[in-house]
Length: 288
Length: 222
Image (tube, rainbow over all chains, first blue to last red; front, side):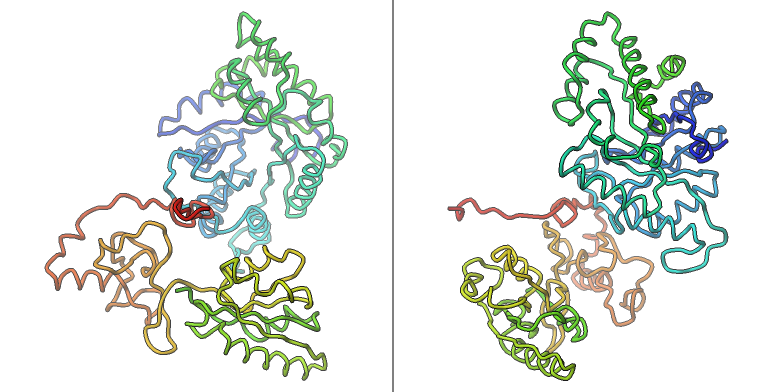
């Protein structure tokens, strides 16, 4: 059963982020993914997040698909023009990739190739339009395609905002949904209460929202996320991690609790971001 | 200087269709030199618009004003006393002008009457060509005073590409291949080996690709 069908029947879906390598050694990615394949519905393959150059999402996703794993290929507007974007979408579908996620892509100034040009030929909403145009059997120039793709399309949504920012985010989410987005990936959540204002405004039965559950690898990481990345992590949670004799075990326990809370709140699923602890995924998924 | 072309009459008429009284503002800077948005062109456009609107049975009142420069807050002040007497203001300056006006008079609505095209100069009377891409890091000394960033369709640092034929670019037969010109000049001067240097990938951070730019001269900041 593909991800789309699982969504359709209301299954609580488990997605896992699987970062392609910076290089050509794919064994760690493949091993991490295959180890947990029974518990994971699809692997989200990021497209050079934070503008750090590495193997493309298309490449990573194709390698995982070849192993029989379902993937979500990320597509960004930063690195390709409309010709390349459409070409890679056709290539992806031709290789069995049925799910994509559109993102704008961070500015190259944030990554490891500061001097490069960002392409940004089309923006994110135009990218979604390009996808829906391809799905009608035509390209953006109006030319007929020999066979049209039928993707399940994802996008980001920021569930952490409140007040006016929440209104803006809801409007943008509605815009994305109208443009053909089927599911939304939300940022890391450590306290379900922190996203209560968002949950009050959105019917989770009608909109598929998938919060990210991030493994806290250290107290330092937790503090950094809380202070600099606008991810609310309570002092209690940080102290709990601090007091724990085995940080990894405690981190997995915390993640398990968050997953249960997300599931109970009626979300469509979770995306697990292991942050390099992919080898611990199986332990986590055994608990879920 | 900045080169612009006037928008089509249809486009301008469509932008101002709901207004009965507008201020048409020209600029004595670049757009006067390239004969698109100075005092004379303001006068001509005002007449054309009034005739067109009269023909449509929807007459419009247009006042004219040409500022020294629309890109300078000091001169932007010249319409302080009158800006709110109009339904809208139509600017004939480059894209900078109507933005400076919008920032100075946030309650008014501003419309552009020209399309800003490029940095260049007149190669003959009535013809202007692009010479600079404003990339923020001038490299023309490597190419004997010719800029491949602005003048090569692909902004190649090493050229020409396979699309160069008989000194022309693949994009159109009337477009010069600047790389053909660069190579010929180097050959004539016996310095072709200059082009054998493989240059590092260009740093585009100083160009528009690095985000909106700002130039600060500490000695002038008060």
